Each structure stands twice: as C-alpha cells, then as structure tokens.
Length: 43
Image: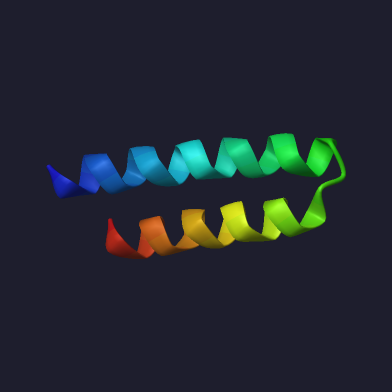
C-alpha cells in the first residue's frame, strides 16, 4: 500500500514541477523535482 501512496505523491510532485518550469520558476521546480525523487526512493 505504501508503494501506491509514494508513487502517487511522486507523480503529483512531478506535475507540480512541470507547472513551475513552464512559469520559469526554476527554484520551485528544483524543490518539487527533488521531492518527487525522494518519494520515488520511498516507493
């Protein structure tokens, strides 16, 4: 069950990161993509 939870969180963070990079907000992108990577490691 934890795998599904963390994978979903990673997906959400990745999409948020994409939204930030479209808005050219690189600092927020870096933070969100790091969160996504951390969630994938937990999955």
